[in-house]
Image (cartoon, rainbow, N blue to C red; front, side, top):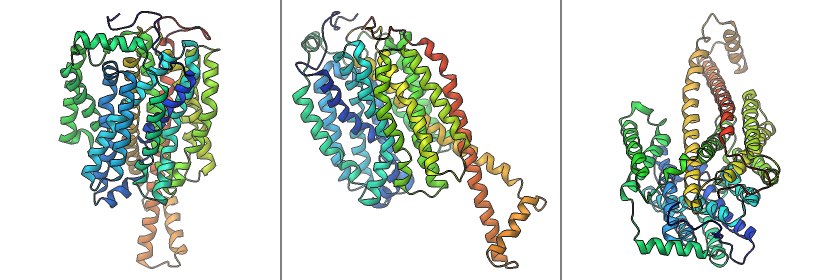
Amino acid sequence: MSKSNPPQGVSLSLAGNHNPWLIAGVVSIATFMEVLDTSIANVALLHIAGSLAAGPDESTWVLTSYLVSNAVVLPISGWLATVIGRKRFYMGCVALFTVSSLLCAMAPTLGWLIVFRVLQGIGGGGLAPSEQSMLADTFRPEQRGMAFAMYGVAVVVAPAVGPTVGGWITDNYSWHWLFLINVPVGILSLTLTNFILTEPPAETARRAELWKRGVKVDYVGFGLVAIGLGCLQVVLDKGEREDWFGSNFIVLFTILSVLAFFILIPWELTRKEPIVDLRLLGNRGFASACAVMFAMGLILFSTTQLLPQLVQSLMGYDSTTAGLILTPGGVAVLFVMPCVGFLLGKMQARTLVAVGLVIEAIAAYHLTGLSLEASYAHLAWARVLQAVGIPFLFVPTTNVAYVGLPPGKSAESSALINLMRNLGGSVGISMVTTLLARRSQFHQSRLVEHLTPYDEPFQRALQSLPGILNTTTNPVATRQAYAAIYQELQQQAAIIAYIDIFHILAWMAVLMLPLVFLLQKTKPGQAPAGH
């Protein structure tokens, strides 16, 4: 145990004289605001580009800049919270996020908007790790299931309703309000945090001892983290658009990321006070929890990206209606999350995680039956089934991740587990975007093989279309018929590509099942040892 860690039995709770459940509610406010911002701007990119006189490709940096700065701050947020103090660090993050949101809404050019989004990502990156470490230390181990369930509602519901809220605001007002809505929420969060959260004496004493000995900043570690994760996030976000390794830009950033991680791992493992405590991954249970959280992020964010994109590109849905496909899933989470928190006191966490993975596999397989004639109800219920499985992954995994870790390591472990969730989301979105483009092209080339004068179904379709156009000999009508058939072919190729991706996601969930046996085993309803 590090000298800076408090001894066993010393409370690190931030509840003070307040009810600890009040703490869970307060920290969930900022969480919802931050996670919502990871998806709310997706549907408004074209509006932002048009308003700021920028191209569609340039506007995607509005998303990338946020994700990059968020990814860089996440792993070092545990160290920053220890040095600054969790309450002070948390309030600083909320304040930075709120002010930068206001600046984003007022940005006069795309360049300034990207700068302000970087600041917003820095503020947002420190929120989730701080909040989860607060909950882990405020609640007794046997209560954490329900606490993380309450907190998890914000984490899971926000990305589900983000596209809906973003689409509605964009269609009815302007994209500026996507950022302005964060301002009153941020002010409310800061006010409640200031009056309700209390810095525990043990935490204050530990920080005072740390400053007395002299804070040693791991500048090399910070630089390696920034380069490694920043370049990786750019590669994942821009890879498909830049043709992956056919682009010198992507190759350069990949090399920089790999080299940074190659140097970072031995460097951090040999530091007495590393900026990222990679030794925590030596705990089998914690490492397995990180892997499950990575899978959850991959499934949640990739499907959140796929479904609205599918209905907008192939079924003609507008932004608001496309977002509403996800909303019933968010409502389902509201009901399922507390139930999972209750079950965690009665059942093994391993069992619940296994149930979650099975549900995700079934939900993804169910979506392989999609067609272009699928109704809104069919798609919404498919999302509900997929959303039901997420609480079974999030709550037990978050709860069991802290089992067996040294006291005082909640902030560092929260930072790593949130990093894995976000990386899973980035990998998932990049993966499905690439697969969609590649599989659509593959199926299109296969279907085109049937567009020949010798293919009877093609000839029947070709002969029927001019009749519909009330012309049989007009060459313009013939060309229109070819165009109509080719458009139908492209749609069929695209829907088959979506089906392929859902098949892959189903198999990925199944292949993750063996990880369940590596999770830390606990006795339901009893406090697990070690933390």
